[in-house]
Amino acid sequence: MIRPSRQYSKILRLLLFLSAACFFWGCAAEGPPRPPRIQRPTKVTDLAVAQAGQTLRLSFKAPLRAMDGRRLTKPISVEIFRQVTPPGESLPNVFVGVKPWVSISPRDLARYQHEQEIVYEDRLPSQEFDRSVGDTFSFMVVTLTRGFRGRPRPSDPSNVARMKLLNVSPPVQDLQVTQSPRSLNLRWAAPTQSLTGGSLPPLVGYRIYRREETHSASTAKLVAETQKPSFFDTDFQYDQTYSYTVRAVFEKDGYTAETADSAPANITPRDIFPPNAPQGLTAVFTGRSVQLIWKPALAPDIAGYNVYRQIQGQSPERLNQGLLRTPVFSDSSIVEGRQYTYWVTTVNLVHHESLPSQKVTLKTK
Image 1 (cartoon, rainbow, N blue to C red):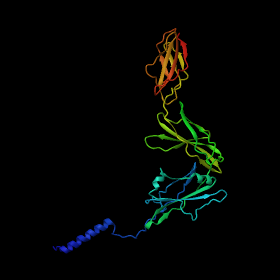
Image 2: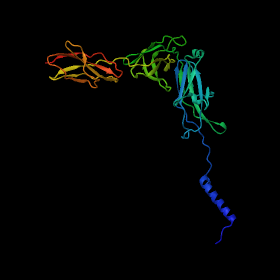
Image 3: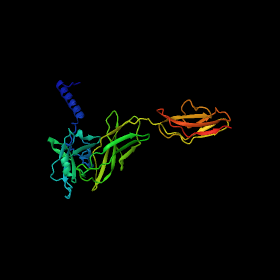
Image 4: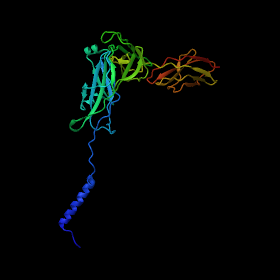
């Protein structure tokens, strides 16, 4: 048997190692080189602008995918374009030769992200607001990534969002909130003057915003719209703190604008009111007992009922030892030939008892 030489064995081992390396690293079959992926963001299509007092609020959803349909992996920058058109001049459909009004780098973008939206607020100084009332503000957005050597990869221009600046009033004044048995009652003063002192545009109503004060920060949510300077909120829970703000809403030339937020009004409702008295009490003598029945209470915080009886010439007494869970009761501790008067009350979960129901009197025979 012929043994391979040592040098031949080393060469064979080297060839086996290279073959294995090529198998794992993909060098066995070299394919054509692939061009680098160009991550050009998809265009923004939901750009919107709204006025709240002296502030124009821009909002849109940041693109998540590139033009090739795949998910973006590079951070994006945002460029906002703005044009202001005085009354009587034609509005621009495209922004040609206009430099970005605001540029937001990837590092700063997180400051403007609110949940899934990017929000940028353009707060106009008082002098600029005064001279711009009636002007139309047009906005457009371009998002972009950076490629080789920082080369920009911009998206197509977004839709154009416009807002004619309306001369709204200052924030709503004298907002008050009080508690009643079934609602939280808000009232405020109707606006009478504009921010610039001129005439107000037509008032179309009010928007009520509510924030629930919890351990974690919460945002104010629109809970109602009304045309009157009052609102009754029936969707609340006891011992939960609520903070309300109100904005007046104006409309002119097809544009709608809000005022800035009113000063907040806070309340923590407590269950301090007794429940309503039971209704529909009837009593029937069966010969051996008196059967009582009444309508069930509909409030969600009812714990049960109490039944009271008064024998003619004696003091009233409660017949049940524990709260009754159902609106029925049988009184078998009666004597023939006597006159009995019955009534019932409702008790809620915090042990407040209602006024007596209508009294029912009968004589056992």
